[in-house]
Length: 279
Ligand code: AMP
Image (cartoon, rainbow, N blue to C red):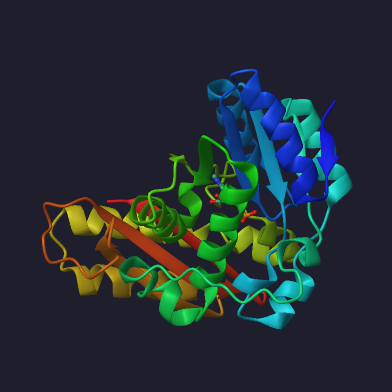
């Protein structure tokens, strides 16, 4: 039976016991409203670790938009049932005060990869992510941590953070899980209208087409413009970016022989969707 813990002290005590027994400890950080994407991370963690913690914490520090924070879905009971089914040992679901007690003033800033794309459009977002991830690693003392490629730039930020600060945790990046029509699973998909949900897969379809264009020699700017036009024609309200970038630094492509990634953010139904694919 999955146990729900609320305090860092309780979590530490449990993990201390596990480590004394020689278990490898895995952590899966989430903001809840769990779907198959999250569960794929938890299953991978279960397969590779003796004991698994899933954290559920809607981190106020990483929301640059108060309305988005307020509207973020919270479904803890259903989440706990799913994690119990997957066999996760512990859910760590602290209150905001437990994570950010009065007097809290420290922040973790990751340079470089935090700058472009989401970094520019969501000021402070990656500082919030890096801070809470560093804290969750400190709280959980996990050996392995599981993140989704769905949030590609976030995954690069976390990998940079762990390397730069010599954190003793192995970061595992897991494939994006999609609905059968191609839409990347996301807790925010719950906020789409039926019509928006029907149109939303156009983003992934346009990215796949643009990747084919790029591979067949269409100039990058033209391929991205075509994808943007296609997404808008399918009823998206706006496109923040569809961009081809260096997969690791997220900078503009200067060396096409390095791994590349196409990343996108677009709005439909007042919901901001992001996605990315290998090119
Ligand atoms: P979130 O709850 O949105 O913060 O996501 C928690 C973790 O689940 C992050 O590492 C995400 O990248 C990952 N994740 C979210 N959606 C998916 C998905 N569709 N496929 C794989 N991983 C995902």
